[in-house]
Length: 196
Ligand SMILES: Nc1ncnc2c1ncn2[C@@H]1O[C@H](COP(=O)(O)OP(=O)(O)OP(=O)(O)O)[C@@H](O)[C@H]1O
Ligand SMILES: [Mg+2]
Image 1 (cartoon, rainbow, N blue to C red):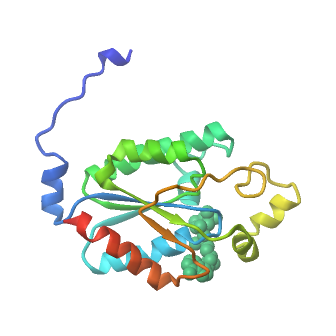
Image 2 (cartoon, rainbow, N blue to C red; image 1 turned 120 degrees about the vertical axis):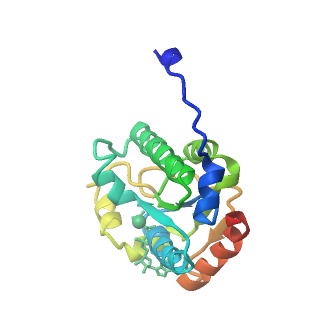
């Protein structure tokens, strides 16, 4: 069937839209354990970017799982499908010229590499929120670690499902060592030139 699908070439392209926006589109990919601080830092960073006049959009785990990916579970296959759809949506948004912040546990290396390939290397920034499991569990913002330890949640990353850390992230943040504001500054330093 796919051989009968032939993409149309449109004249207004990624570059033209970026020109009009005044900056390039980027996908800022936050990965890390639940409670590591992905949404918190993404939220603070988006406020900063917004103030600077940069057009942003945030794709956040729980929000996307309530809508677009409401049909998916946390099995390895569904986690991969979850990330595949987000990669495709993120890519469309980057194509439209937005700086997209995405905050998903995204525990598998191969899935994150698939995202990088989908949006292209130059548009992808991997931010590893490397907060130790003990600290995430102590915070237990959503009460999910306690539930997982009681055996009430299967496939919970860090407890009974694996997390594969990035080996070469663009930014690595340990939130037991770095404040929210310093994390934002560090990411800004990394992306500033990529926005030109
Ligand atoms: N330096 C810091 N950076 C980020 N978060 C911090 C920091 N210090 C403490 N926190 C707290 O850690 C918690 C992080 O929770 P957050 O919801 O952002 O995690 P998450 O990675 O998005 O988790 P999930 O995958 O479950 O959505 C928040 O309560 C936040 O206030
Ligand atoms: Mg979150």
